[in-house]
Amino acid sequence: MKELDKNIHDHVTILCEEGDELAEQEDLKGALAKYWEAFDHLPEPQTLWEATTWVLTAIGDANFSGGDYKAGVDNLSYAMHCPKAIGNPFIHLRLGQCQLEQGNEKRAAEELTRAYAIAGSEIFEDDDPKYFEFLKSKIDM
Image 1 (tube, rainbow, N blue to C red):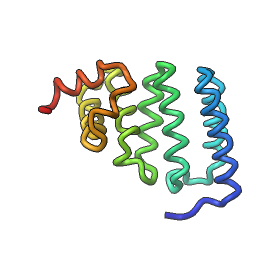
Image 2 (cartoon, helix red, strand yellow):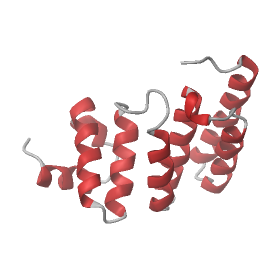
Image 3 (cartoon, rainbow, N blue to C red):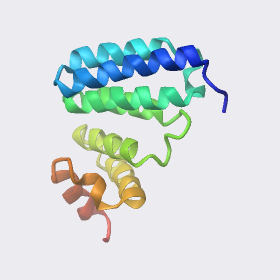
Image 4 (tube, rainbow, N blue to C red):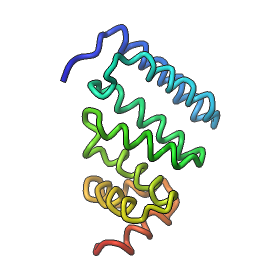
């Protein structure tokens, strides 16, 4: 895996931290603007950089929080093509949740199963219990 230029990495990190602060204040529109600005600073092809993984994850998380589940599926699926995304339980969780909200039960069950297999039931604790209940209805625990 290639290393991202330090100046670019630092700038992207600052933009994402600003986005995180806005997300914490529930300004999802502002957070998304910061995250997309960070994404735009990543050299092409963006799928080479680990930073892209966390930028797209932040975008997908904001999409989920804002109820834009289609965008969440799109952005989190794109993140899966980036370094260290596959096997990240949080990305699998959010992608599964967005898939479920889109009515894609098969894909939701696959992603939520991955999250559960990697991180256990604890990964579901901060979210609506319906996601864990759905998973329990799909797999033997």
